[in-house]
Amino acid sequence: MSIHETAFVHESAYIDDPSEIGAHTKIWHFAHVLGNTTIGEGCVLGQNVMAGPHVSIGDGCKIQNNVALYKGVTLEQDVFCGPSCVFTNVLTPRANVERKDEFGPTLVRQGATIGANATIVCGNTLGAYCMVAAGAVVTHDVPDHALVAGVPARRIGWVSRSGERLNESLVCPRTGEQYREKSGTLTLEKVN
Image (cartoon, rainbow, N blue to C red):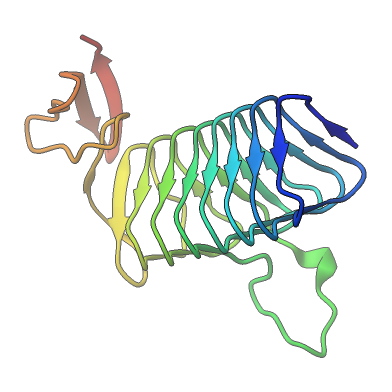
């Protein structure tokens, strides 16, 4: 087990060996980090978070209370997971059928946000800087910068790298960054 000297782990949290906890990361009450899990620098794992086994959490991630990150989940850097959001790991679970060899991978790309109580069905990729609305159910890949909502989740707009909803001008109201939409994808065109 490797816990950086600047990391904080609450006395009620459990960290299984082997695990790796980066500098300045905070792990709060009743969290459980299972073996072979890597947590980057500057992360926050809220109360009752469970991560692992074999989970990768990039630098700067914020995981709010009551989130479980099962085997197969990878969070790139600066991902936000809202309170009680759900990651599934099997598409057709049955209590009486062993399916641990069927765990589906879920990749959440850099800067993505997942709202409170959203459900992410395994086997999908959430694109960089996308935003999943609270309570949405993601059943397919989400493009970079897409704002998705509903059950099942559908794209209802675009968001900038700073999380601002973009209007038809595709200019971020916070930063002035200019985006371009082409063939259902959004790309950053100009940084101010």
